[in-house]
Image (tube, rainbow, N blue to C red):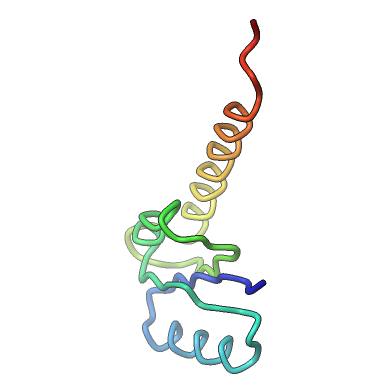
Length: 91
């Protein structure tokens, strides 16, 4: 099983460098996407399967810290919805 990574950084050269390094290092890791800011990264949540986000801390529009918190909130909400759907309703 391949690890699916998503790169979030406002510097295009940094994103390209990270992608090249990751893809050259291991065939078990696949870069599935890139974004130049946190808001653009959040738009992908639930649309593509991502295992790991590589996140810059300082970015325009939405910084990496706030983006990470929102990702955690999205994942927690999705897990809660999944758990509720899997548990039969009380009779």
